[in-house]
Length: 185
Image 1: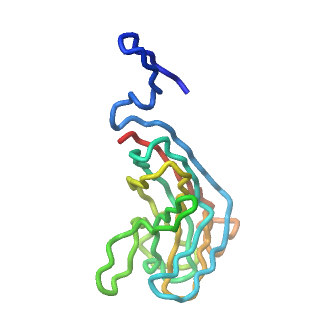
Image 2: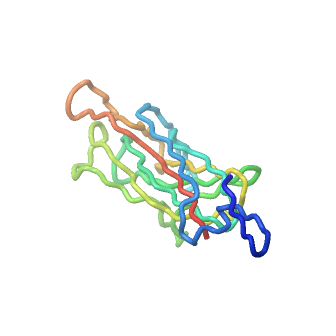
């Protein structure tokens, strides 16, 4: 840790304490081209499922915010427009919280928008859930962020690939990533 010395007051201060608000203190990243199958069962709005896109960060101050950026790429084997995506936050030793929209009636909750092909195809039309989210976990414990998928009935999500996964077009292989940046408060 770098330190600064103030000769007039004879104090030593960690550099992080003198950073202006909005400074980036640390950056961690996870990038994956690995594929996975995530089985989604029925269960309505509460049935969220973890993907392999996950990363932890330990904030240096409880007043820091965490900028979560990333992309979850792949395809589900059911109607493209019915898939939902969110970021799940889990603080070490505590409970998990889904970072998503506000519950109103029976609306389906989600946090990240989806970019997908115009045709609604569940065999070769890949999707990318892309997002940036500024979170305030208010802790100095390890915080893990995980991209999750949801489908209201039984279906399978295929991370970083299409359902058919043929060795030709249009069966793409993709990349998913998550970047966490600690920002001073």
